[in-house]
Amino acid sequence: MNRRLLTVLLPVLVGALMIGAWYIFRLHILAADQRFLLPAPDAILRALADKAPTLWSSALTTATGALLGFGLAVALSFTLALGLSLSPLIRAGFYPYLMMLQLTPIIVLAPILILWVGPGLKSVVIITFLICFFPLVVNTTQGLISTDRNLVELFRMGRASRLQEIFLLRVPSALPYFFTGLRIAATLAPIGAIVGDAYAGNSAGGQGGLGFLTIIYSAQFQLPSLFATAAVACLLGFVFAGTVVALSWFALHHWHDSYQAKD
Image (tube, rainbow, N blue to C red; front, side, top):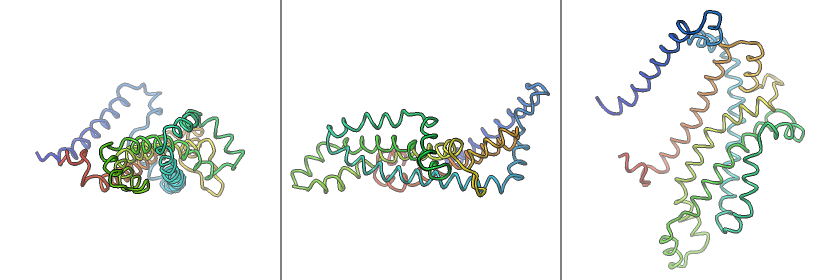
């Protein structure tokens, strides 16, 4: 069988087996009075259809917060990474504070952000930014300082300026590291937006995101709708991650070893 066809069919087969196992577990292992805790896949599909307008509106709100926070993290992390790559002393001075920012729990930051900027999209964007920022700046900085020393010496022998060395050598060499950080951040962005929406979101004007919707369905014990919300959130994550994978392939597949080896 064609290998590419097999790579498509295998996930479909595994998915079908998992759904079958889901039904078997629900009908033959769970007690009758506990089956409501695990809705059947067809009940979740019905909830997806019934709640489609609400889920779509909430997904757009969450996607907006995720995209804005993600874009802000990409722009600021790349700028900061350029500065951090210039000197070990600069890195030594800033890294402890980057770690401090990363290790501070969002559940602590959310009330502070609500007091500073108010609940709603602004807080969600900032929370998403904080979650995405660290892996981007760390990976990009590592890429910028990991440029082949022989190539650096060659540029300096050719009397290249510092800007030429950075933008014609170090930045292209750092692209694989940058896209690694981008993939991590793209996975975290929807999660950050959903968490931010749960802690600092606002449903004013019908603009509550998936995190806010999760709280509502959980409080009302609407389990099929809760699972449907989780499915939409998962799909949103796939869109973010898939877009970054496509961008990575477009930027690297012509020259980077990781793609050349696959050919």
